[in-house]
Image (cartoon, rainbow, N blue to C red; front, top):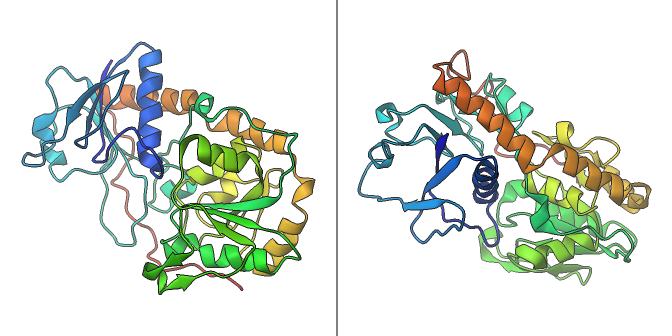
Length: 330
């Protein structure tokens, strides 16, 4: 197959960027399986295993798809999707809280994500774990970590910090934010038990995760998938979060604990030693790898190339949230 992957961002991803990392591994695995891959992506992108075609923002995306392409994998819904002449799928990686309708060839990134839009069409993100190195099951672990865009209130860094401060002596490393942030209403965290690392990626991020006792992830939205969750599990860190979105289907009782109560999470964090880092690692390797993800995409590509739709009807949000953030009991 000749596959074109369309993404408006820049690849490769250096620090934060789950979608960019996801499509990188999808393309690389397709090439390993003998398919031809090209990326229609943001200016400044580069790739050593596939052709890069920079997006021309003065033109519609439909007109920039070469005739030789067999199938297109969009990772957002283009404005001119009705003009695309090739078979295609559209993967939605985020949330919305309105009643727009999505294309019948839409793919979501978890079972819960799909169900909230009246769909059963989903593919989990899968990483090429070779890029993450090996976990460390022997070295001492002396802190927990938060991983995500701290400036997003729905990620609930405030809640993660509160959990740590309510323990007797646990510490937190924040990956994805700074101690001083005016966008959060002039957030200034004085606690010496909380250390900020800013936006980190690559080996620096992996090193910090290897030495962590666990991921604190008390999100206050329906997490579509949670790349931070599977990265942490792979490197041996159990997950302590809220039971929202995809988390209950990804974080089982053997690899973490979920509650929207701070006191419950405090207790769980203080008993984090009961979880096996090796089991967390093996679980992530088996269930959220690039090969499994890519094989699922190949199946969907064949379906649309044969004229089928991935959804019986256009997906649409089933229930609109009345509040911007889901409950958190401090």
